[in-house]
Image 1 (cartoon, rainbow, N blue to C red):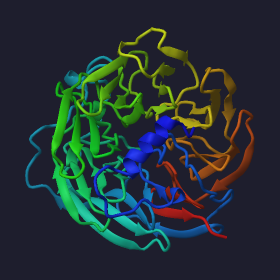
Image 2 (image 1 turned 45 degrees about the horizontal axis):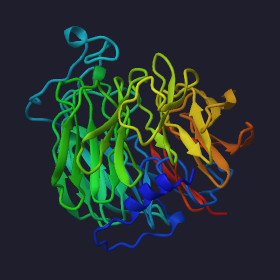
Image 3 (image 1 turned 30 degrees about the vertical axis):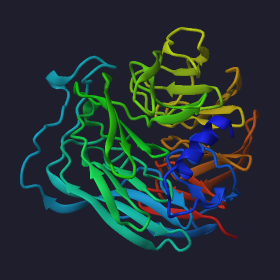
Image 4 (image 1 turned 90 degrees about the vertical axis):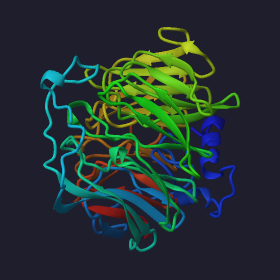
Length: 456
């Protein structure tokens, strides 16, 4: 949905008020952050292929060293990817803060702690890497080690230590490795600054996954974990100076903050097990809050001109369409324009495009579509043949919706209220990261390879 709200947010990222040495490329030439230039999974322009395979429309295919599940981003002629590479060396000393691993540390579901157990890593050192690829050839232009270190806890077996997506405005490239810090580079790979935020202790040692949000000169990081030291913090992207920090009291969260502008004021919206909260971007003051999601919310919220849509799907289902412009506790108030309690995603974020809200059911190959204004379903529970599981979030461009499965299969649907499959495509690699769309190309990060899909 090309609303004034999301376009304003996009403009603040791509056209910062500070002097920039890199002019913004044409709109079809970038996918600058997690969920794209409009923060909702859509590309404003472009015409990537409808069909592809390992031998058809693969412009190039580049091996990615190490492992990660973060979405690649694109700016002009460059593609950026984060990864974590084991060095084969062991750490000299044990980390100062041990991981929480269930047992006596476990608490009730939805609160601090959590059942189950994940083993801490055996002290192996990793290089946490920022990679820059040439968009035309797939050649690595530069590779920087943001940090070398031994992770203090393990991670869920389906992801790793590089799950956050980078973000850029064409001058600054922000790479977030969670407990391994927030790092700023220019697009030539020159290091500008780094910030250490501490050691996150995640539920069941599931690992870290939230990406930073960038708006104008401000970069925001949310830090919800199993300690009593949760916070949300804002930095100046130019210097790394801390602008504000506010305490939170939520269990581990994996949702990326959404920055929106409404009635001339920018606000940061963060979902969580306890409450969705909105903070003033300039001061960090809380504007509103709203309960109603299930535990472990992972999907990032999306927003239209006057409404934010928050979803969760672990041990229950929830969609809340919350009116912007209100203040205070909005729980069960008329600020909730509509809600829904089935067929909602656990990991994949929703897709909002031209008044349509697309939702994956949990992590399965099942899709639903709703009228974003009213909440009325256009279709529900449609099976995506050939896709068994989904972690990637759906994306849209040029009247098409692309839904990527974990097995390398991608269904292309006709955008609209009717369920219509246009094509089914398959690659050999496994695929958990979301697609990036830029012009007539799409970029797909597999477990082993980065693909550029495009060309004749």
